[in-house]
Image (tube, rainbow, N blue to C red; front, side, top):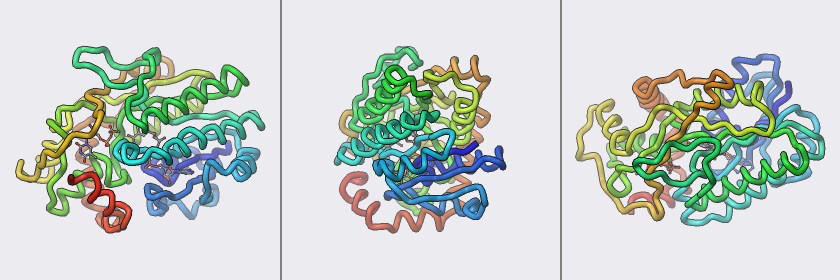
Length: 334
Ligand code: NAD
Ligand code: TYD
């Protein structure tokens, strides 16, 4: 099988490529990634020499390039996106360009050659839950509330529209928050662990009682593996992790694992429009495809902290970059 993985140099995409190469040594994988601030070839250093793996720097908005690649693959798996909610609040233009128009460009090429297409999406498209609301599932109406989630919702709608209108063989996964190795140090886990390792405080937005359903990244990649091989065309699968915790619970776990105290926590101004709670009901993918997360919250948190401790060069290089410095000054530690 020949895979075109878009956005494979980011956090989840790089973990996915590593999993595919380990599980299917005869597959051919092309990784098309623009290498924005979030893309990093160091994420795939250990596999870059594999004969069946090829990296290409390019934009999913480049229709000529995309068509030339899509023609020669069996499936397109789209991870490429602008992904950070805080950045989308500062400026959403790149989010619309990549997440919406980029997806449409991929879909057009998939339509031209009638290729299987998988869209990697998020549970944030469903909006924010109240404390007693049932978790999101595949029938929950879309109600995105940040520019990021609005752009992901738009791209999901387009993907489904291509199925209904053109019979394009698509699938979508809507997954909860991921954590694990190679997460860019601007998201909660990457930022907080590395700040603590540098002796810096961690900026908890507002009261820190917002809830997310944390899933270890490899478990998400295994779910995508199942959906691209056994998922039913035209269907959506919700993927979640039994990792429902408040941001303060996550923060306290980091402090415990690193032997640090509460003085390292700074409560800062809340994120505008901050979604209070996400939770996912993943019964469908469990029942139909036999998926279940393998990594417990305790084990995943330990593995993640250990990974950042063992890979200081990886994140130090990123954190000393101008782009992140500018962003920290403008937004995070305000
Ligand atoms: P990331 O920001 O770490 O990586 C995104 C990658 O896309 C980067 O390598 C970047 O260079 C690339 N990219 C951006 N614009 C591009 C363009 N125009 N053309 C080609 N490549 C481009 O993101 P991530 O956390 O790995 O998320 C991957 C996907 O999974 C996204 O679609 C995201 O919405 C979705 N998702 C993420 C989470 C999460 O918790 N991180 C949860 C559910 C779903
Ligand atoms: P994030 O990793 O940005 O994911 P998302 O907003 O897409 O869920 O944030 C996870 C949670 O952590 C979210 O409730 C916002 C909160 N958060 C902080 O409190 N401080 C921070 O510096 C960051 C980056 C996030």
